[in-house]
Each structure stands twice: as C-alpha cells, then as structure tokens.
Image 1 (cartoon, rainbow, N blue to C red):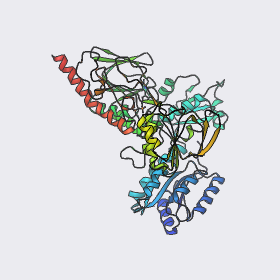
Image 2: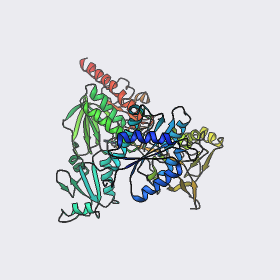
Image 3: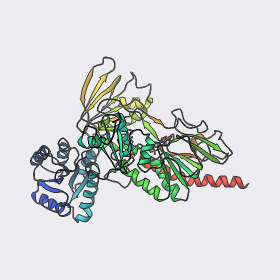
Length: 561
Ligand SMILES: Cc1cc2nc3c(=O)[nH]c(=O)nc-3n(C[C@H](O)[C@H](O)[C@H](O)COP(=O)(O)OP(=O)(O)OC[C@H]3O[C@@H](n4cnc5c(N)ncnc54)[C@H](O)[C@@H]3O)c2cc1C
C-alpha cells in the first residue's frame, strides 16, 4: 500500500446542475482537508472524467451517482466505473419518495457495485449525508490508506504461505503490510538479513525478525493468546464464528467464566463474507470481518477470554466436568461446553471462481440474492434438495435458471417432488453431466464456461449469478462417539435425540440445544437441522446460555439429593 500521490477524489454525478453544486458543496465543507470533491452533470462526462483520472493515476475514493438520469441509470454508471476504479466505493442517490428504486439498490449491492444509498434531499447533512459517507470512507480507508503496521511480511505474493499469512492477519484484524521481495521496501527490509530464506519473512514492529515460525508464533507476536490462562472455566466455547461469539457475549455477560477456542480466524465463515446484508439492523450490510470484530470486542469487554490457533482436538466427561483437549497437547476443563465449530462449504475448484465470491458467485444460500438475478440468467451448481429449492425460488424472478448437475440423473440425489416441480417450472433448465470449467468477469460475474463431461466440449454462456450448493462438511471429526451425529456428521441435539440413551449420570431429556453428552451444547451451522445463517447462529449462541444455567441447576440438584 502506498501513500496516495495527491488527495483522493469524490465524484458526484447528476444531470441536475443545482443538485451537483449543492452536494459537492456539502461534501467539500466537511471533507476538503483530505479529499478533492468534483462534480459532473452527465454520465458521458463522468465516464470520461473517470477514464482521465485513471490515466493520470489518481485515486477515486467515492462515486455518488443519481439513479434517475435520462442518458444512463446511475446504477449502470456505478457498475461501469468498476472497470477504471475498482477500489472506489459507490453510493447510489435516489429520490426519497421513489421506493421502486429499492430494487435497484438491492440488486446493485448483491452484485457488488453499490455499497450504500443516499436519498434526495440529503439534509440535514449531519443526520442523512455525513454518517453514510463516513461509514463508506472508513471501509475505503482501511483498504487503501497505509496505516500502522504491526506486522510486515516480505515475500513472493503468489507463494501459498504468503497468502495464508495475509489471509489470517486480515481475518484476525491485525494491521499488517505486505511487500514483494523485489519491491524497494521489500528489498530494504531483506537487506537486514545475512541470508534470505526461501519463504516469506515476518518483520515485527518491536524489531524482531522471524524467518522460521509457526502460525502460533505469528498469532502471539500479533498480541493474541494461544493458550488458556486458567486450567478450568465455567464455559468453554469451541469456535469463534457468529454462534461462538454470541455464546461468549451472553455467557460472559451472564456471569460464566468463559474461554473461546478458535483454531483459525475470528468470524468463521461469516468472516470471509465481504458483506452480510440480511443481519438485523444493518440495512446496507456489514462486512463479516467487521461484525466479528465488534462481537469479539463486546465479548472481551464482558470478560471472555480468547485463545487463537489452538483448537479443540478432543472432548471427554470426567464426573461432572468436561475436559477439552487442545491442539498443543494442553487441556482445559469446564462445567459446560458449547460446540460452535461450523462447517466448510465444498468449494468449486474452477479458475475465476474464488475472485468473484460475493460479486456474482455465492456459496450456501440463494434466498437473499433473489433480487440480484431479476430478469437475468442464474446458474446453480448442485443436485441436492437445497439446489432444487433454490432453482424453483429463483425462477420467480430470474429470466432463466440453469441447474448444473455432474451426474446423469437428478433423481439420484433430489426428492421426487422437487424433480417434478422443476420439470413443471418453464424457466428452470437442467443440464446433466455438466460442470463449471471457468468463471469470467471484471469484479463481477459475466460469463461461465460450461463443460460437457461426456464430450469434453466447452461452451461460454452469459451469467449474472452462480450459486454453489454442493454441500457442507461439519467440523466434527474430532468429537467422541458420545456426541451423536447424523449420517452427514452434523450434531444431534434436543428432540432429535428422543428415545436415545445418554452418556453420563444425567438421565433427563436433553435441553433443546444440548447434545447426547450432558453439559455439551451445539449451536449454529454444526447443529443438525440448523438454519445456515448468521442471525440464526447468533440466536442459538445466545439461547444456549440459559440452557447452560438450567443444566448447572440440574447438576446442583442431583448433587444435593
Ligand atoms: C462466503 C460466505 C458468505 C455468507 N454470507 C452470508 C450472509 O450474507 N448472510 C447469512 O445469514 N449467512 C451467510 N453465510 C453463512 C454464515 O456465514 C454461516 O451460517 C455462519 O457463519 C455460521 O456461524 P457458525 O458460528 O455456526 O459457524 P462458522 O461461521 O463456520 O464458524 C465456526 C468457527 O469454528 C472454528 N472451528 C472449527 N473447528 C474448530 C475446533 N476444533 N477448535 C476451535 N475452533 C474450531 C472455525 O475455524 C470457525 O471460525 C455466508 C457463508 C459464507 C461461506
């Protein structure tokens, strides 16, 4: 990351010159110390200006564009501006009364070319304009403006270890800088070494230089704890995704001494989402990383302790206590354990897919993205019931939905009623023995290359969205048999365990989120039958806590009799 040459730019676009003048004035009044504010009164002039700024190497931080322009809708201009200024943040301006435009905003957000929206009139500025611009700029600044670097990595950008380090630091919110070994900054740093190793070198702010290291060394150097401070707690939470973070907030705030174990990065799957748009209270969405960081701080302020890069590897009941084995061969005991280890979605391994996640390529669920595919061509990879349901659902708004199936038959993996429903839905087409060979698009999916598995023939088709629904693998392989699971490995809880014997002295029916091992609870995506959403994971994390109190009460009553 380099310091911008000159002040980054805001560009305001509207065909009404007085609106441009007023908005430029309002923005300039507040942001002139750090940004240059410019205005254009036509889409053509705006595109020309953006091209010229790109040519000159100027940084555009923010583009605000009015939707109802005659020559080109603002949303289209924002989408086009990604070609020259992919890093810029984009705000769509709509008339306050024009509720129809909400569809345009939702679709723009789903496809990644609208970050926020503003309404006309935007005054009072302090209430309606500045908070939206501030939030947008905060995100732009984090990604584009150099700041304090606790860790500096020097290496080859394409070395997988260097990517893994960057990803872990990014997801754990550690301020860092990455420098290519051949860059002037990188060479200067490497000049401190007698010998340059064939792997990324880590330079710490306190002057230490690490040439050989483990993940735990880096986490510790970045200020994280990698071992629990105590031997025993009231509650051990395994996993710091939304469900585990929520259990930590509610557990710690309700008086339980709580430790959270996380073997990778805070935020879980949600931490990999650039924008979560369906979480209550965030109408313009929030990045998964930011949501996780806020939850982490909240749990920490209530007294929860966090241990990173040292996950759980075993679990056993010892009398009334539960003992969790750790990856570093240590262990920690607790009166209750919350399993919030989530799942990993099976990844589609085709060129171009990874770069377009969230910008037309979606994992997990199609429900919240239906507006993104309105009158467009959508594709779903998968042959299970979730893929079938998504196809029928998306067909209500998409121009066409194509289900891409590797097998030669849908009935093998999908319920008969869904196969029939798909057959009766004209907009859904099924392509058997077909796989995705590549995805194309500049920061937004535009085309897919589909391969016929019988002939090997490739066909390139236009595509606005690709939903990947090829299954999820729960992180439960490390658990003992006493924690019963369904045939896919998801943990059974509450009523799912009816009629089954329980391990240990507690013969009462398990509580709703309790597993077959008394005192062990399962929440979020790892639980059989769970709704795979951030909000439900958070909800289950909080609901587990009163049930833990109930379990502890049962335990105390048993001890008293
Ligand atoms: C790219 C993407 C985008 C998404 N977008 C949305 C969205 O917009 N809206 C929405 O509602 N949902 C979305 N989801 C789904 C949502 O993120 C999940 O439903 C949610 O994160 C589940 O939370 P969880 O805490 O149950 O599990 P996870 O988020 O999977 O977290 C589990 C955590 O446990 C850790 N862990 C696993 N095993 C161990 C172990 N043995 N010891 C210690 N730690 C362990 C993992 O490293 C992980 O951090 C998205 C998912 C993905 C992948």
